[in-house]
Image (cartoon, rainbow over all chains, first blue to last red; front, side, top):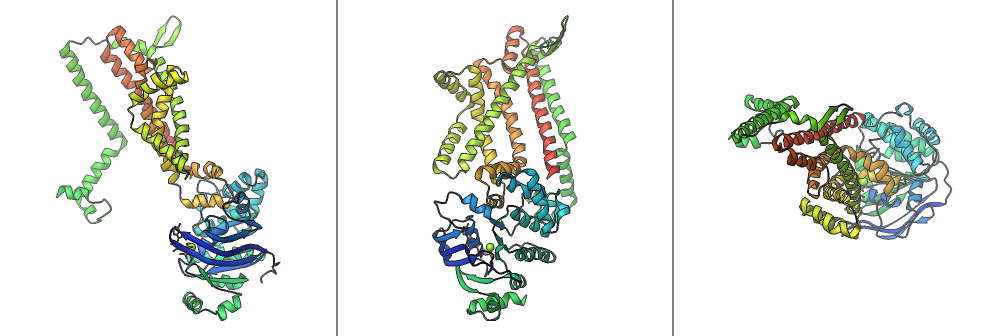
Length: 251
Length: 288
Ligand SMILES: Nc1ncnc2c1ncn2[C@@H]1O[C@H](COP(=O)(O)OP(=O)(O)OP(=O)(O)O)[C@@H](O)[C@H]1O
Ligand SMILES: [Mg+2]
């Protein structure tokens, strides 16, 4: 059951454009995410979903428009981008764990080096979050020794160890073998239950139905449809969105 | 025909890889790649060269005095064990090489970071430096630093030697760093950024530790190159291994024995270095 969200906006995206050279990847995108809200973004490949959420922690710099994250406007003048990034966790499709560090070190390097907390506190926190993602026994292994599902859960725990206020997910299950998808989704559902603000790019519609407060459909760099999940799945207003849903729900 | 099959990619055609001739040639190739065979070959070549030079020297009426050589390595006098001149030359060479290598590594890292900085001025400066150093003969660089830059900034010949070697080798080392840094996937940068790391922190905790594995073999190779090119500073009379060798020869006229000895000493040092580092590499490989 979605937790009641307070309606203070924590991410405000207004008329965002993004160009890669001459190619326009985002066109006039506007979206507001309230604190505690869970937004699921879907859409065909190349529609700009990744680009949009990567703008939110400024892995990509937007070309025009306004973007306010946790009260800070992101633009060329933003000097405390690192402070913003500490509040915005990101989970990648390819996990991007640090292969030269153990699982525990993957989880503590951020808190120790960036948050500047003590090693002991960082390790306590890391073990707590490993417990939360159901792999406390893997702390001393290296990422390469884990299965894909375990690696992605470590990646989620790594982000959570920074105690962010927002979590971004970019297709967190699409690099996984089918039998591992659910263990990651379960962790994400549990995370949703804690009231975390989440923005997920995913095509896992079962997950979306379960946790989403708001569904977003993108195509060709534009947001085509924004709706609450019931309406989105039962009665989408755009024809393109309906076709897309029919396609992926068939499988 | 034979040429064509040699050029075929080893993985390209599985059926041709199974013919007896192919298998035999593969086996012979592997044989030549194995360590004991390589060492054996090496000694055969050395033996042939040595025999030829002995024959040549005999024809010249050269007077071999190998018995005098050990004294220049170490001696037992009434005071007990003492190192000989060649040993002190070697210590100087190593001292010089270590200092030059450390300096070259720092300069190389700096140049690599400048090039990767994405700043137009930064990569411009780095490129000019690299082109300048790469296109300069080592000997000319040494003269330039010793006779021109040295007097201006008032550094002695020893510092000039170190700076020259460091500058010369920093060019390759910076390329090694650049390649090593670029070998780390972009996702690692993004993950480091996304937990709030600065560029410096990302380099220090995430990127450089991962690129060391890639950089270690070429860096060792460069250290070996540096030890070898350190011989050139004998032209500005630094009392290192080569200079000592030359001095001994001018006193004793034993040019064959001493040059062979000096060559062996260089060989032993560089072989020890390579062996240590390949051990280190194995440890790295096991850890991750
Ligand atoms: N760094 C880049 N340089 C140039 N073009 C890019 C870059 N990153 C993305 N693009 C282009 O921008 C468009 C949107 O890409 P994006 O990755 O946001 O799509 P997506 O919706 O996440 O697709 P997918 O489902 O395949 O991940 C694509 O056409 C892509 O080719
Ligand atoms: Mg994507």
